[in-house]
Every structure is written in C-alpha cells, then in structure tokens.
Image (tube, rainbow, N blue to C red; front, side, top):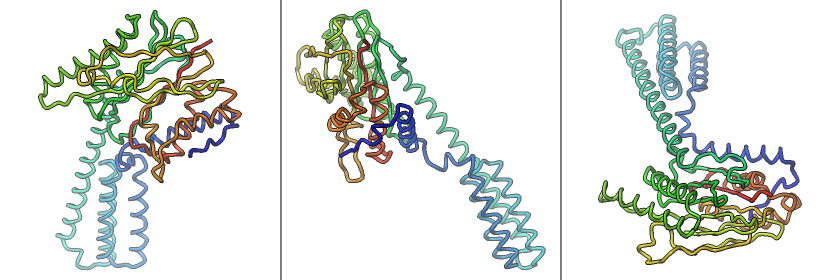
Length: 394
C-alpha cells in the first residue's frame, strides 16, 4: 500500500517534491552513463595519472609505471572528448619517458616507445568513435522528441475552458518512443479530451498515436455528436493500418485503448466514450468514483468484434470534481516486492486527508501522484506512464 507522505505540506513544497520525483524518473531515461560523462569525465584519468606518478616516484620502477600509465589514455577514451584523450596520451608519454630516463632499463628501447605511441593513437580513435556515437544518439533523441511533440503537444492553462494538468513519464531509456498520447480540445461544442495507449512500442506506435490524435482533433472540433467523433477516430485508425499494411505486407495492425470525454454545455454533465481503457477516476467533494470502462472494444478491433456504433455514457460531472485519466504505466507500476500501484486506494486516501479535502486541483493532484509513484517504484518504470487531470472551471 502506498502511503501519502507530506499531505500537510504547502503548495510550494508539493511542487518541489513533484519536481524531484520527475528528476528521479528522468535519471533513468537519459541514456548510458558513459554517454553523459564527458563534462566531468576528465577527473577519473587525471586522478589516476597523479596516483600513478606518485607511486612511480616512490617505487622508481619504470617498467611497472609504463604499463600503468598506458591505462590513462584508455580511461580518457571511455570518458572524455578526443582532444582531452590526446592530451592525456601526450602527458602519459612524457611521464613515461621521464621515468625511463631517470631509471634506465629495457623500456628505453625504441620498440617500447612505439608501442606506447600506438596505444595512445588507439585511445584517441576510440574516443573519436565514442564521441560520434554520442552525437548520433543525441540527434536521434532530439528528432524523436520533436516528432513526439507533434503528437503530444503542450496544453496551456485554461485551454478549452477547463483546468488541466498533464505529465508524461517515459520508461524507454533511449528513444522515448512510447505510444501514449493525450490532448485537450477547445471546440464549439465544449471542451473535449482524449487519453490513450497504443499497442507496442517504437516508431510504429508513435505513428499510430499520431493517426488517432489527428483524427480526434479534426472530428472532435467539427462534429457535435460524440458517436460520430468515435466513428471518425475508428475509421482514421483503420485507414492508417491499411496504409501501413500496403507499404509492408508483414505489418501487424495495431489497436489502441483510449478514453474520450466531452464536457457538455449544461455545466454539470459529460459524455464518455471508453475504448477498452481503464475507467477514469473522478475525485471531488463526494469522494472517489469510477467512470464507465469496457464500453467498447479498443480502437482497431471494431471489425473483428463486429460491434456496432460506439456506446456513449452521459455522466454527472460538477465544476468542483476532477477527472483523473492514466495509462497502464501507472496502474501496472510495481514496487520492489512486485506490488502494483493501487491508484483507486491512493485516491481515496488522498481525499480522506486534510490536504485532499481542501483541494483536488489538477496541478496539485498530479504533483502528489507523480511523487508517490516515484516513491512506489523507486523512480523505475517498466512502461510509459501518462497522466491527465482535468476539471471544469467555475
């Protein structure tokens, strides 16, 4: 069971805790440490260089010192830029020759010096290759993040006439190409939101998420009837899968679980269309309740299941109530004992606390949820976690 810590903290303390929690998740998605250590990587070979020099002066055995000094440019190749690696290589060669002159021995031979030079050149070559690999990974991540921002765009405060907050916590340590998506629309028919999760990972899932979000943005804005919106989104995914199959006959069509909510103009009700996704939670003065789930099959499976038009539920939703939508990366997040994150119990405990009774604002709600999720998982997710909290403004 997750315990809610710091419920009596102020809003600034809660935001700071949430920021620390996001950093804990982000630490796991910044890529291999060797690709990030170039800024301070010079410290390791520098310390090793000094230690070898001190020990060499103390022992005065040039043959042993020479072997240990060759490790300095090799360490630099793994942690530093090619220029810094070359600098350490030159320093190692100079100190090597100094020890050889001070304590002449078999290492004074020319072939020994040539071997040292070859090791330094090899270290510089390794540093060049590693640096180019690092630059390639950075460019790849930048391109992927730019592509993802097309699918999951930032939502300004008050957009659509509702108060909303979002959080995306990727589990992919390299490409960050998950299939989670969300959006908030301002339309002539009221605010409409969507949150969903595409089957699978990688570029194909990101492309599928883009097709679903694109269909929702167009249909959600122009169509008044939510049944028509649902049909247009289903058709958009069907055509997308057909296109990918035509390009690659081996492509397997993907399905999508999603929830679409339309806030009605009466100020107290909303329409919910659930495509095989977990039911959202509603938190408010009346407690915690689930919105409908399992109404319809996931998007992309309508033809296989033979289902008719999407079923739509009209539910009461007052201005003081906050709707919390998450992907399975939250509900299936495990702790070190393998226990799932108990989202519903977490929400009930939150409302039972003094802080929870005072506010269920979307920003504060997600701050607490991200913080407790980080505590539960120790900052390590096995799947992307996407969170969207929204409530009607007064």
